[in-house]
Length: 360
Image (cartoon, rainbow, N blue to C red; front, side):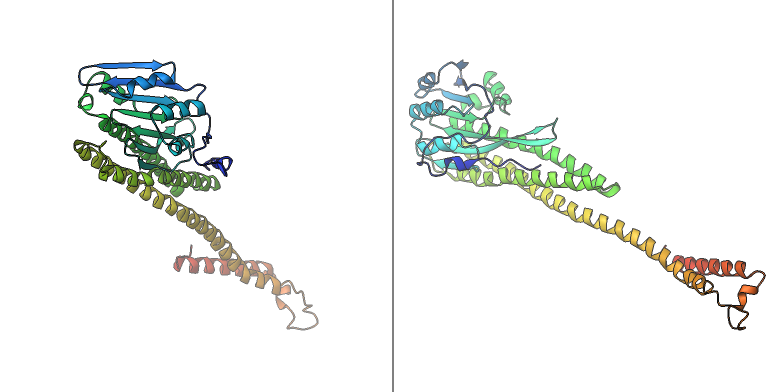
């Protein structure tokens, strides 16, 4: 399926740092939720005003501020002022056509990546941009709409499972990245099932509609590659970062999600090669079918050529009364039957010859 192009032309010519939302409006209202925790305490609440986020900036505990909906520019500007975010960072947050990337601003780290989901009803891949701000004791996540792959993380924080309540904000950022990347494997599995089904269809009964489906698969693999390939550089930069915000104990976990990213990229590359091969198989299949039709028509024409020759000769009707050389067979009692028999014998001999040569 062809992906709609984001209309980034409306930000052309504007001053750097000018906030203009680029993308689809996916929420009616911006929603703010905060999960604040340490090893012994935990609180979770929905904020009514963005100004309430300020109180979590200087706390000793770890705060996860999640914002659903990024089209309200004034709210994004207020968040930027409260957490001293660079105007270019705010511009990248509201521009949903960003390439996955990472930027280190000393006081915080800015990460952009794509969260991908699979729409079962439409059988297509959907994507939304997720922006993360990693601070000394907080993580701010910006999403285009409600609904994400972070529910398991919320449950771990609520129930104090694993090490997350004992770790700092960098570990929280790692878990968010890990959840997004792990979800890629689900998408890869769905895409793999579609490709396997397409291969069976291609071999058994390829039709013009099959080529359209192959084209849709190709668009999906290109879209996935575009979304995931830059993430390799993002995770690698985060792993090698010398920022004071990244604890040494978190490096081993970042290496793990780097390996996962490589696995996803390898799978996508394999799928892309497979889908490209499908186009060649489809064209070969169509060509073979055409060759079979042409082969049959050629054999039929070849069989009828000598028969037509015989019929043409006996269709000249030269008067045998004028000359003995003029079609004496016209006076034969069984001349007509002999001519038909000759034609039949020629046809049978040619069919036998074709089968002997394995042309039929």
